Amino acid sequence: MIDLRSDTVTKPSQAMRDAARDAEVGDDVYGDDPSVNELERRAADLVGKEKALFVPSGTMGNQVAIRTHTERGQELVVDEQAHVVKWEVGGVADLSGVQARMVDCGPRAVPTAAQVEAAHVEESLHRPGTGLLCVENTHNSRGGVAVGVDEIAEACEAAHDLGVPVHLDGARVFNASVALGVAPEELTGPADTVNFCLSKGLGAPVGSILAGPEGFVERARRVRKLFGGGMRQAGIVAAPGLLALENVDRLAEDHANARTLAAGLDDIAGLSTREPDTNIVMLSVEADVHADDLVAACEEHGVAFGARDASSARLCTHLDVSRAEVREAVDRVAAAVGSLRA
Ligand SMILES: *Cc1c(COP(=O)(O)O)cnc(C)c1O
Image 1 (cartoon, rainbow, N blue to C red):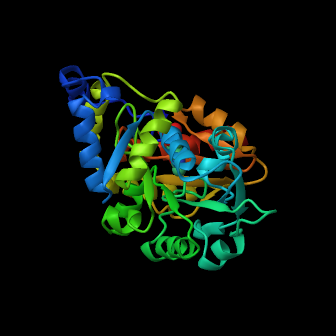
Image 2 (cartoon, rainbow, N blue to C red):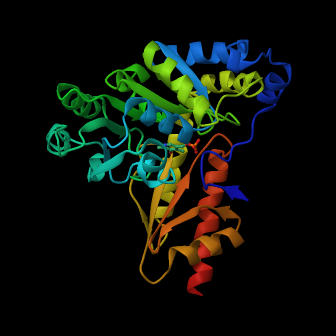
C-alpha cells in the first residue's frame, strides 16, 4: 500500500529507534529530563523564541496555548477552516471557555488587517472582548497553503495594534519556510507563540513543540499539567524528536513529490488538482464519481488517501514515500478510475 493519507503515517527511522533506546532520561515533571531539556532548547532556537515546551500532540500544544493566552468568555479570532476550530473536538469551547469569531480567509488563508479589525470586539459591560488571534501556516484544510511573510506580519501587526496577542498554529511551519525559501523565524517572529509538530513531515513518532516568551511558557507548563500532558521519562520520545529537527531541509523533496503527484493526477480524466505549495495535494473529483467510491477503488489498487467531501480528497507526501512510489501511485489511481468507469 502506498499510504498518502497523511504525513503522520511515517514510521520512526532506525536512528530514531536507537536514539529512543539510548536516551538519557529523568523525570520531566521535575525538569530533570536532559533529552527533553535539549529538545526544548533547540526547538526554541529554531523558531526564534525564548523558551519551548514539549507536548504530546499538536492539538495539546494549540489548546494549551489558547488556554494560556485567554480568559473564559473571551473571543478567539480565527479562519473558519482553521485546525484549532475544525479538527480539535471543540477544544476552544470545552477546555478554554472561549468563543470563536470565525473569519472566511479564502485561499489567502490568513486574515487581512481589515478582517482582523472588523472581527475585533472591545470588552465592555455587554461584550466579551477579543483575547487572541490564531493563524495557521501552512494552512492544512486550505490545501497546505504556505502563507507569506508579509501576509502573516500584516495580520499579527493588526492584532498587536489592538492589544491582542497572536498564536501561530505552525504544525507544518517548516513546510512553509522551505517552500517560501525564508528562515522559519521570519514566519514565526511576528506571532507571540508558535506550535509545531515533530510527528508530521519531520518524521518523529510523537510530539509537538509550543514556543514563546519565557513567562508564557512557564504558565503554559502549568496548563499542560492541567490537561494531563505532564510526562515523566519523556526523553524516550524527545530523543527521536531531536533527530526530527534535522529533517527540515528535506521537506523540499516532499514538495517536489507533491508537485509530481498533482501533475500526474491532473492528467487523469475526471480528476483535477492545482499546483500545491507544499506537501498536501487537494484533488477534485468530477460529479459522476463520488470521492468515497474513488477512495475505495484506489485502496483496492494499493493507494490510500482520504475523501474530504463528495467531490474532493486530500493526499499527502512524506518521508516514507519516494519519487518512484509517487509515480506508481499516479498509475494506480488511473487504473482505479478506469475500473470505476468500466
Ligand atoms: C496536525 C495538525 C494539528 C494537530 O496535531 P496533532 O499532533 O495531530 O494533534 C494542528 N494544526 C494543524 C494545522 C495540523 O495540521
